[in-house]
Image (cartoon, rainbow, N blue to C red; front, side):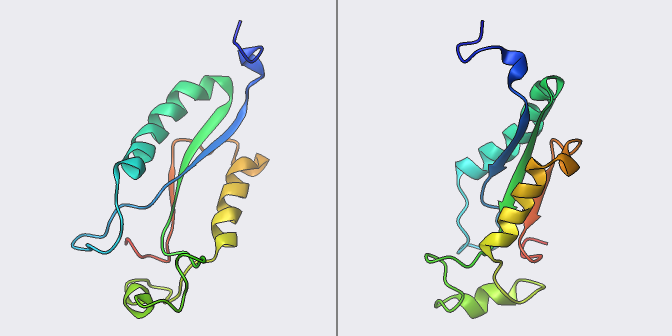
Length: 122
């Protein structure tokens, strides 16, 4: 028996949130092994967990306005110059994607990477 009960009862969505891939030539955007790990494990986990009705997706937010990344910070103009939408994203925009992935409308969406960055990495 599974230590937390019947394994068949564990169903639902998994959303891995990580930083997006770095733009080519962009040295100011952080990139680390954690993001690469999430991106690599997403599709494999989706294949492994799909038979148990568990969906796995990766969410990659780009420049999002937060207390640590204010939209009026010293690099704002430079960062916004690389986005097609010319602004930082909002936390609720990322939360909206995660909420959609967790909802019934996305029950057949699995193994995908969703980038929310205003075309920053395009």
